[in-house]
Image (cartoon, rainbow, N blue to C red; front, top):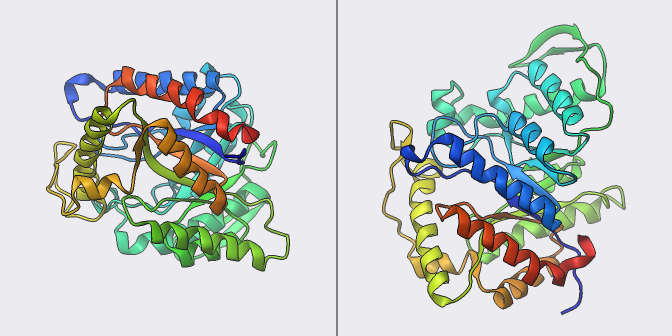
Length: 344
């Protein structure tokens, strides 16, 4: 296989299935992954904002971005994503500028509307309002980051002219998380970088998502050539068939909790998401994930490269052992990344 231009990011998505493990240890594990990824030449690490739950647990993404930057040399720190409807853009814009300064320009700001009804509802933003709140929040944020003396008279924001301080020292790169192909097409034409995932869905959804991105770029007559699409997938480089089977079973358990708050009833006990039975079998799930050995991993990533994926965001944190996860990251850098070295 020839060299393909794909960059790689490690998603530092905290999974906290046992309270006795301690949040300090969870975030320590994530920082260890970031330091290792930086040393091994990964393009980025990414952080996902979530509150009140033990899956994808990161209530302070910008603060953690600063922590990561202080312990690394060159790796980009990407949010995947921060949830705009949960923030006041007049405060958040200043925090973004400060974070960009504190990370020496390594921040890549991925934004989204929020995905878990349990989380959003308890923080006062019903899911049926997240789209309209997000759209207005994004408009306000872009205005505050690029203009001075901004005033607003909208549905959710009304304020007199103000200027965010300090002013940005460089443009903040915005990325938007979208799953729906029509939404991807619209956001790309708006000039935004795309973050997407088929989750545990079928391959056709992925083809539709990437196709929508590519069609939008084609429609822009060269003005969108700089735009990128990042694909997030649950992934783990395994050493043998038994390891693949064990990690896939762990991922199936993870999705039993993830689905509970993403598409299910949102049953949470004292912050711990209850694992629910899944209709999708372990074998069916295995077909939609990147949990495999090096040869199969290279083949699958090669297919994504041919589709035009610019960055793979590898979610390696779904309940596995911390030491094994670090070993998998190192093995990935040695056995897989050289086949895509033109981007790294």
